[in-house]
Length: 242
Image (cartoon, rainbow, N blue to C red; front, side, top):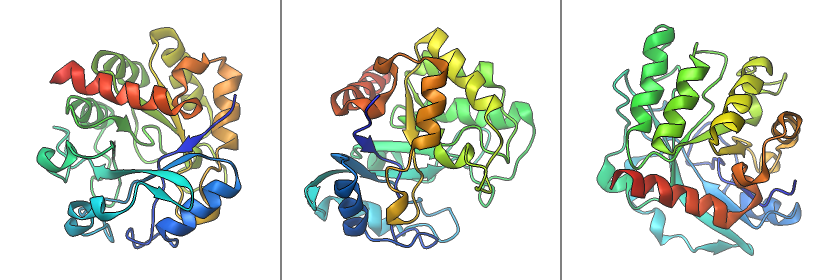
């Protein structure tokens, strides 16, 4: 299974990340990726990018260092209702949008409330990907999560840092395997993501890739394998609601 893209990549505009867009793109080219994404944290995250970063993101070229760059955001889920911290009139112009819960923005509540927060965010037509749904800080009903993703045509992320024992978000592989088995059963697309905060992390997807392959997920459900598949899946989400 060959991966060609990694869209969950942060830059110095997320102030707890350490590389520029050009540095991310240069490393991506070195390791053979054709496409990357810019997904800096939206403003509610402590140290997140300023609103003007997202307003002005279209001033960037589409190709940097020979690599195609998708322009997106990692928005923060703010409450159980699934509200996010950028308005839809801005999100609708993004190439892709990741929505995720972060403990610096939304402290863990309980299994039902935390699961509801993800499900309600999926009902936003401009939220295409749920980022690190199974991180260590929240208890999520995985069955309900995958059923909602199937219903709303939302992509579920297999986050490298959630399955890397060296990460503070590590929660073991058991929950991720359960999620992937349900995705296989319900035909829910997944996206492996590095969640890179330094350029050499871009495209670092070995653990996620191995886990996906161990479950035997069909390549047509693994969006890193095809840019066309990735873009078509995002378009399908938009058409579902609009």
